[in-house]
Structures are given as structure tokens and as C-alpha cells.
Length: 168
Image (cartoon, rainbow, N blue to C red; front, side, top):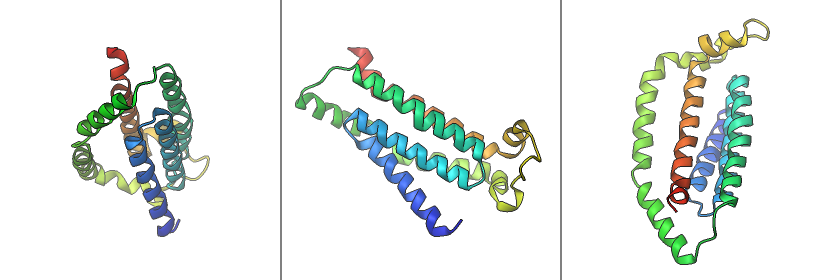
């Protein structure tokens, strides 16, 4: 896999994530999130984690956006003024998020650095050489941490997006 392909995929991933966060329409935001998850699944597959990629594609790119779209279709339509006020409130809520993510990413990088050798091409498993349990728990810990972080981000997005709906 060439470096330009990786860079294009990572830039696309970040662009979809940013568009998902700043999009005022919940349905469009859910679609941006699905696109982001699909790109992430492709990256995982290209890095040699087909099981994590399949999980990402099926759950994070398939199931979660469907749940978001279903829930957003059950909410009431608000006026322009209410939408603008909610947008300003959302922006105030996310002011510190980039700094938090950079700090968390840096800490995780230093904690997980000894395990990064799992991602190198010379350590990939050959087909049929190990069971799925051995792959997930013995050789793909970095993928599992990524999946846990993605699930927690989905839960956090659920709380942020639907907190106002529950209060009404």
C-alpha cells in the first residue's frame, strides 16, 4: 500500500469526521458518519485487520447510522431561531474537543507504541494459521482499542445529539 493512498484515506476520514460534527442536519450528519466509518473500515482492511474492518463496516457504518436516522426522524421540526441557538450551543460544547482528542491521541500513541509492531507487514498472519480468538486477543490489540474508542464516541454522540430531545 503506497503512502499517497494512505494520506488520501486519512484526509478523507478526517474530512468526513469534521463534516459529521459541524453538520446541522442530523440525517446528513449520520450519513457523514457512515462514510467516515466506511473509510475507516477500508483503512483497517488495508492494514491487515479484516475482522475489525468487517465489524466496523457492519456496526459503525451500517447499524449506528440507521439508529441515528430513525431517532432523528421521530423528533419535531424546530424554527430557524431555535436551530441557530442549538448550533451556537453545540459549537460552545465542542470548543475544547480538538484539544482533548489531540491529548488523548498522544497519550494513546505513547501507551500503545510497543504494540504497533502488530501492524507491520512482516507480522501479518497467513490465512489458516490461527483462530479468530488468537488473532483478536493475542495479535490485534491495537484494533480492539480502536473499536472500543469508536464505540465510546458513538455513545457520546448519542448523548450529545439526543440530550435535548429527552429534556423536552
